[in-house]
Image 1 (cartoon, helix red, strand yellow):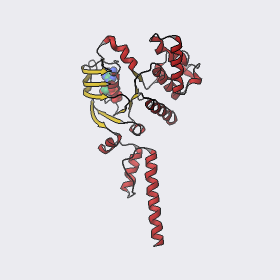
Image 2 (tube, rainbow, N blue to C red; image 1 turned 180 degrees about the vertical axis):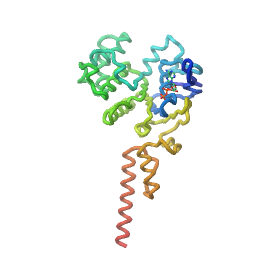
Image 3 (tube, helix red, strand yellow; image 1 turned 45 degrees about the horizontal axis):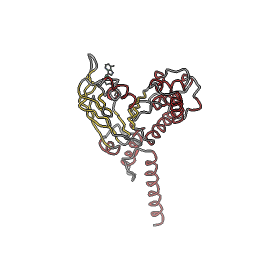
Image 4 (cartoon, rainbow, N blue to C red; image 1 turned 90 degrees about the horizontal axis):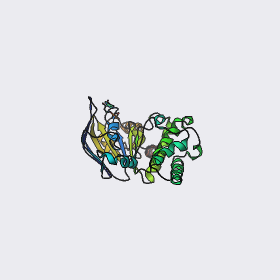
Length: 279
Ligand code: ADP
């Protein structure tokens, strides 16, 4: 559904930010795009809804080439984008007005707009806040409101570009829960982050970038097997336990799995102690 062919991008008078990138994203996937600050993640995802146009190569979204100017609005409707700073994304004086902005631009009938606004606000858990001014919301609520604004356009695919980086852990968890639910309901998700740990348990595929190029593409487990450093804190802990002689798997990255592994190791240790005592 999204095809990126030999995509290169150079900022005017500046860096080659993307260097011959090739990838495809299928309908219904949950892809995490990871990599250090400045490696080209934002530049790449901005190509997916024609905010940037390739210097070289091409990007095709549902068969529409992003260079094809008359298609840009259809492309932006198909691929929604949520950014790091929700404050910069608000246009309405109330939440419902704000979320209605996109569908209004599609010139939809009023009752359809109202239906979409309620659906989108309900989906992010903010329906009861609909008459509030966006600026009175907390950081996490603002980010969920920004997601509602995108949902009201009914996109096939949503790109989240470092949307949790300014949030406290609790809000971060709520946003991630919302995104998982959207994926569960059939949306294609592209999630950009520098925090590998937060996304490994949820993503179906990891794409890692370095210096404008793709350096790895594969499942979370394959990703962990391929890296020595920059592993999630949980994996790092399990590796340390294993190095100390505990019988645990060191390729887990979800807290629940780590909990099970540690519980099993403790039970085994307990059994061994008991056998020694009895013997
Ligand atoms: P990431 O999202 O992984 O942090 P970016 O896509 O923002 O990376 O940046 C990739 C490279 O492009 C960096 O070297 C960055 O300095 C450069 N860059 C980003 N935005 C601009 C811009 N507007 N003008 C010039 N260079 C830019």
